Length: 170
Image (cartoon, rainbow, N blue to C red; front, top):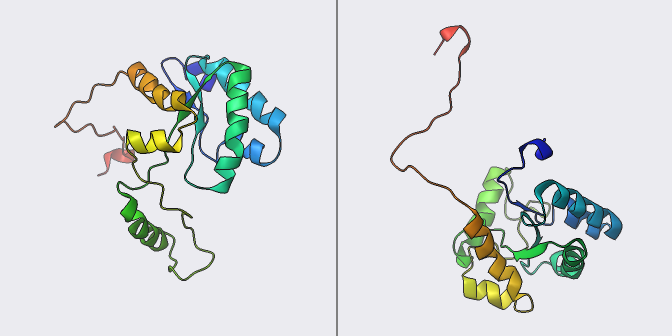
Protein backbone atom coordinates (compact mmCIF):
# COMPACT_ATOMS: atom_id res chain seq x y z
CA UNK A 1 0.00 0.00 0.00
CA UNK A 2 2.81 2.41 0.89
CA UNK A 3 4.66 1.54 -2.28
CA UNK A 4 1.56 2.30 -4.32
CA UNK A 5 0.74 5.65 -2.69
CA UNK A 6 4.15 7.03 -1.62
CA UNK A 7 4.33 9.81 -4.24
CA UNK A 8 4.50 13.24 -2.64
CA UNK A 9 4.86 11.91 0.90
CA UNK A 10 7.62 12.49 3.41
CA UNK A 11 8.23 9.67 5.90
CA UNK A 12 9.88 9.85 9.32
CA UNK A 13 10.99 6.77 11.24
CA UNK A 14 8.75 7.47 14.29
CA UNK A 15 9.00 7.70 18.05
CA UNK A 16 10.01 4.93 20.45
CA UNK A 17 6.87 2.98 19.54
CA UNK A 18 7.91 2.80 15.87
CA UNK A 19 9.30 -0.28 14.16
CA UNK A 20 12.90 0.92 13.87
CA UNK A 21 13.30 2.17 17.46
CA UNK A 22 11.56 -0.95 18.79
CA UNK A 23 14.01 -3.21 16.96
CA UNK A 24 16.91 -1.21 18.42
CA UNK A 25 15.45 -1.48 21.91
CA UNK A 26 15.18 -5.24 21.37
CA UNK A 27 18.88 -5.36 20.42
CA UNK A 28 18.14 -6.09 16.75
CA UNK A 29 20.37 -3.57 14.95
CA UNK A 30 20.30 -5.54 11.68
CA UNK A 31 16.50 -5.68 11.79
CA UNK A 32 16.28 -1.94 12.48
CA UNK A 33 18.63 -1.16 9.60
CA UNK A 34 16.70 -3.49 7.28
CA UNK A 35 13.41 -1.78 8.17
CA UNK A 36 14.99 1.64 7.56
CA UNK A 37 16.22 0.45 4.16
CA UNK A 38 12.70 -0.78 3.40
CA UNK A 39 11.26 2.71 3.98
CA UNK A 40 14.14 4.41 2.17
CA UNK A 41 13.53 2.18 -0.85
CA UNK A 42 9.84 3.06 -0.89
CA UNK A 43 10.05 6.81 -0.24
CA UNK A 44 13.53 7.53 -1.60
CA UNK A 45 16.52 8.84 0.30
CA UNK A 46 15.31 12.43 -0.11
CA UNK A 47 11.90 11.72 1.44
CA UNK A 48 12.75 9.36 4.30
CA UNK A 49 14.28 10.70 7.51
CA UNK A 50 15.53 8.97 10.62
CA UNK A 51 13.78 10.70 13.51
CA UNK A 52 15.60 11.63 16.71
CA UNK A 53 13.66 12.40 19.89
CA UNK A 54 14.91 13.24 23.37
CA UNK A 55 12.31 13.87 26.04
CA UNK A 56 14.71 12.90 28.79
CA UNK A 57 13.73 9.25 28.49
CA UNK A 58 16.63 6.83 28.91
CA UNK A 59 15.53 4.55 26.05
CA UNK A 60 15.54 7.49 23.63
CA UNK A 61 19.01 8.54 24.69
CA UNK A 62 20.24 4.97 24.36
CA UNK A 63 19.14 4.50 20.73
CA UNK A 64 20.10 7.90 19.29
CA UNK A 65 23.66 6.80 18.38
CA UNK A 66 22.31 3.71 16.59
CA UNK A 67 19.69 5.76 14.74
CA UNK A 68 22.40 8.14 13.53
CA UNK A 69 24.61 5.24 12.50
CA UNK A 70 21.77 3.67 10.50
CA UNK A 71 21.02 6.99 8.78
CA UNK A 72 24.65 7.37 7.73
CA UNK A 73 24.94 3.76 6.57
CA UNK A 74 21.83 3.88 4.39
CA UNK A 75 22.32 7.43 3.11
CA UNK A 76 19.37 9.31 4.63
CA UNK A 77 19.18 12.44 6.75
CA UNK A 78 18.31 12.70 10.43
CA UNK A 79 15.66 15.05 11.79
CA UNK A 80 14.97 16.13 15.36
CA UNK A 81 11.36 16.15 16.48
CA UNK A 82 9.53 16.59 19.74
CA UNK A 83 6.44 14.54 20.44
CA UNK A 84 4.09 17.41 21.35
CA UNK A 85 1.06 16.56 23.46
CA UNK A 86 0.55 20.01 24.99
CA UNK A 87 1.67 23.58 24.29
CA UNK A 88 3.49 24.75 27.42
CA UNK A 89 5.77 22.73 29.71
CA UNK A 90 3.60 23.56 32.73
CA UNK A 91 0.64 21.86 30.98
CA UNK A 92 2.14 18.44 31.73
CA UNK A 93 0.23 18.13 35.01
CA UNK A 94 -3.09 18.88 33.34
CA UNK A 95 -2.18 16.48 30.54
CA UNK A 96 -1.58 13.67 33.02
CA UNK A 97 -4.93 14.39 34.71
CA UNK A 98 -6.66 14.28 31.32
CA UNK A 99 -4.97 10.93 30.61
CA UNK A 100 -6.42 9.65 33.88
CA UNK A 101 -9.89 10.81 32.90
CA UNK A 102 -9.53 9.27 29.44
CA UNK A 103 -8.39 5.91 30.84
CA UNK A 104 -10.73 5.90 33.87
CA UNK A 105 -7.83 5.99 36.36
CA UNK A 106 -6.72 8.28 39.15
CA UNK A 107 -3.38 10.00 39.60
CA UNK A 108 -2.75 7.66 42.55
CA UNK A 109 -2.97 4.51 40.40
CA UNK A 110 0.55 3.12 40.05
CA UNK A 111 -0.27 1.29 36.81
CA UNK A 112 -1.91 4.24 35.07
CA UNK A 113 -0.81 5.59 31.71
CA UNK A 114 1.45 8.58 32.25
CA UNK A 115 4.22 10.47 30.55
CA UNK A 116 7.37 10.13 32.65
CA UNK A 117 8.71 13.61 31.87
CA UNK A 118 7.27 17.06 31.25
CA UNK A 119 9.13 17.43 27.94
CA UNK A 120 6.22 16.65 25.59
CA UNK A 121 5.44 20.31 24.85
CA UNK A 122 5.94 22.51 21.80
CA UNK A 123 9.57 23.55 22.14
CA UNK A 124 11.13 26.59 20.55
CA UNK A 125 13.88 26.26 17.98
CA UNK A 126 16.40 27.41 20.61
CA UNK A 127 15.23 24.73 23.04
CA UNK A 128 15.50 22.07 20.34
CA UNK A 129 18.95 23.30 19.33
CA UNK A 130 20.03 23.01 22.97
CA UNK A 131 18.70 19.44 23.28
CA UNK A 132 20.31 18.39 19.99
CA UNK A 133 23.43 20.59 20.17
CA UNK A 134 25.57 17.69 18.92
CA UNK A 135 23.39 17.27 15.83
CA UNK A 136 22.59 20.73 14.40
CA UNK A 137 21.78 19.20 11.01
CA UNK A 138 18.88 17.36 12.65
CA UNK A 139 17.32 20.72 13.51
CA UNK A 140 18.16 22.24 10.13
CA UNK A 141 16.39 19.34 8.43
CA UNK A 142 13.08 20.35 9.99
CA UNK A 143 13.18 23.39 7.70
CA UNK A 144 14.18 21.16 4.79
CA UNK A 145 11.03 19.11 5.38
CA UNK A 146 8.88 22.23 5.78
CA UNK A 147 10.19 23.50 2.44
CA UNK A 148 9.14 20.21 0.83
CA UNK A 149 5.55 20.64 2.00
CA UNK A 150 3.02 22.43 -0.14
CA UNK A 151 -0.33 22.69 1.58
CA UNK A 152 -3.03 25.27 1.01
CA UNK A 153 -5.69 25.64 3.68
CA UNK A 154 -9.08 27.03 2.81
CA UNK A 155 -10.24 28.65 6.04
CA UNK A 156 -13.89 29.39 6.76
CA UNK A 157 -15.15 26.51 4.65
CA UNK A 158 -16.48 23.28 6.12
CA UNK A 159 -15.29 20.14 4.41
CA UNK A 160 -17.28 17.29 5.88
CA UNK A 161 -16.79 13.78 4.56
CA UNK A 162 -19.53 12.26 2.44
CA UNK A 163 -21.32 9.46 4.24
CA UNK A 164 -24.08 7.54 2.52
CA UNK A 165 -26.68 6.48 5.04
CA UNK A 166 -28.40 3.15 4.35
CA UNK A 167 -32.00 3.48 3.12
CA UNK A 168 -31.61 7.28 2.99
CA UNK A 169 -32.22 7.47 6.74
CA UNK A 170 -31.04 10.43 8.72
